[in-house]
Amino acid sequence: MSGLQFLGTGSYVPDFVADNDRFSQILDTSDEWIYPRTGIKKRQLAVDKPNYYMGTEAAKDALKSAGITADKIDLIIVSTCTPDFFYPAMSCLIQKRIGAVNASCFDVNSACTGFITAMDIAHKFLETDKYKTILIVSSEKLSSQQDYTDRANCILFGDAAGAVVVAKSDGQFSSFLGAEGDEFDALYCKVNYQSNCPWFKDEDEFYENRFDTFAKKNYLYQDGRAVYKFAVNAMADAVNHVSEQIGIAPSELDLVIPHQANLRIIAKATELLGIPEEKVYTNIEYMGNVSSACIPVGIDELYKSGRLKRGMKLCLVGFGAGLTYGSIIMET
Ligand code: ACO
Image (cartoon, rainbow, N blue to C red):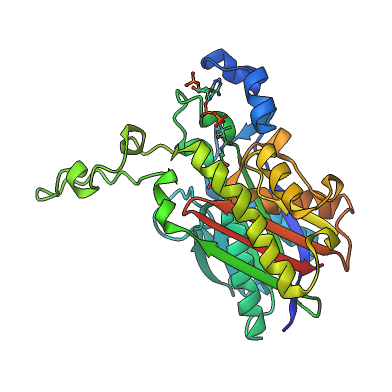
């Protein structure tokens, strides 16, 4: 089986900075509460830009970094759980804006696991040899789904986009994707269709009274403690799966880029795996949780700073709404 290599990476982070003090001006909260529990000091919000704008800018940055023109892209895969439109797919909007005239397009949504899912799909497409160059964009505008009176959740999330251009390689590659749909109501954001269909059923009956008031207002809802509990074991399981497939111990990895939901989750999961702190990349302190964009933004930061080198054993691991989880080990 062949591997996958990065030809180029890119990202876009909006200008508006919301640090913890800004939240304490609108909510009963403080840096003293937020930082020790989450590891977050600030996050950036796309207050004047749609999600597809961020995705397009990250895509352009990745093409520039790869040194190729958009017409060389055979496929665009976008991961997002915060699209601007139900349809068309955001990949089509980005295709138009960058001029990727030869690309097929589709989106995936496995929430924060989205980038790992997209990488796994890209790897399988590259294996067919019909697709040579694939653009993956993970773009998330979590601010559009927050209730800014809900201090337990809105302080966690930021907005950003990350992108990579990938092609086949002869390095090692191993992936694992898991899901536990039983726990879907631990973390969700319901679509509010506002239908004027005269025969539409009462919403409570329709949804079996499962969802609380946040959901009715189409805001993100999460049971933070349930997600926390799931996340630690799911991340450790996912890394163990791919390590076994490739025949190494997690401690032999060169670099791990985990999903950035909570610094304590990352610390606990990597401790369980015996991975030393210096091999674990985090940017949650200044980015917050940007869902599926966390990992590709991290890849871009590492790639452009020269820390991500050829031949490294890189591990990506994440979890998110679904609940989903997954991991990849690739030789860069
Ligand atoms: N400021 C001050 N007090 C707060 C805040 C806040 N921002 N938020 C909650 N509190 C209060 C609560 O009201 C509660 O008060 P009470 O005891 O008087 O009732 C108390 O703090 C404890 O609240 P908990 O929710 O139990 O706090 P917890 O210690 O569990 O931390 C947190 C909350 C940080 C959200 C944690 O549960 C967590 O990180 N969970 C995982 C979240 C996660 O990883 N989500 C993934 C999202 S990925 C995706 O797919 C979108």
